[in-house]
Length: 424
Ligand code: 7TS
Image (cartoon, rainbow, N blue to C red; front, side):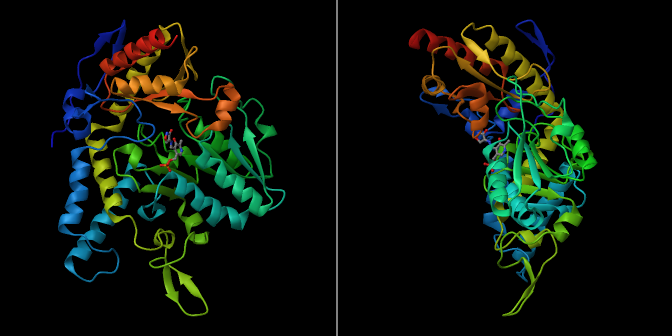
């Protein structure tokens, strides 16, 4: 495997000085990036949906199945012990990567969606009631809306929303309006998958703590792209997905304060999550295993561990810087196309750009770009309340990662201009 840590010297494109990673080397680690699509080189700009996987991650998963495939925590034989060791070592890597309270505060789930549902069921159903309020924002992904709508319906609690401005930032001018002694949980997105907004989570966590509310952070779009320290954020729960950070699909993380995990009821029942079972009643295993009923996603968790190794070799700080530079370049070049409207704020934004092209439906745009081998996302991005706010049916979105280049943004912009000529 080749690993890239070297940086290219600052290059100048469009008048901007951009510090970039050595993408020539990095891209060699991602086999899928060298394939052709519709006869063209693939320009993959849908990283907010899922990332591509380096060979090191693919190799690690293959290694598991070829060399020590066995169930974990139960097999008293060599390959079972090795599988358990690798699975638990992946947990340690995750814990270190986000500065978790301790290794056992990391629960493996299927992904961000399951992590949030786990909290909504195991904590929400047992701690919320009529008169209580759950506070979220208008810029949440559906996976941080629906579990709370269901929890509110089941418990009689009320769901409230911190409003957003048209530019995709939160309106926090009058916190006392939203943070009250009724507020029991504040659940918010760290980095918006539509606007790219990076929300002031620490400040919001402080407002929540002032009214004794718990804080859940949907970090699906932040952990893969920037250094996240769960303890420094001041939150109680942090959720993210492995597949958006170079890991395989089918694995994600819920990191939670140990005392909360210890007090919470199980989410799902079954093997592994128990201490003892009689026909009348049962007792629970310690966290995190209390929340990992049944045979877990062993290969996927081990693959996620390899993804973290890879991210750390490149450096998450360098990845953040690379994406910041790419995003600035994309904002500059896209905004030079008169028909393009870009959404989101100019400051505090992560590595993605949502936009629309005058008189072109984003689905038509995505389809034409696809003919050129360019993969972008078009749709409501599982954030329909944002579309309602913007009064658009959908947007196009280009989202970046460590292997993307300014040249790919040029390809995107050329594709958009050709689409405008073709469709309007
Ligand atoms: N939260 C955020 C902020 C997300 O962006 C996503 C997925 C999820 C939660 C759900 O993650 P999952 O792994 O459980 O599915 N976002 C997107 C997207 O923007 N395009 O496709 C998936």
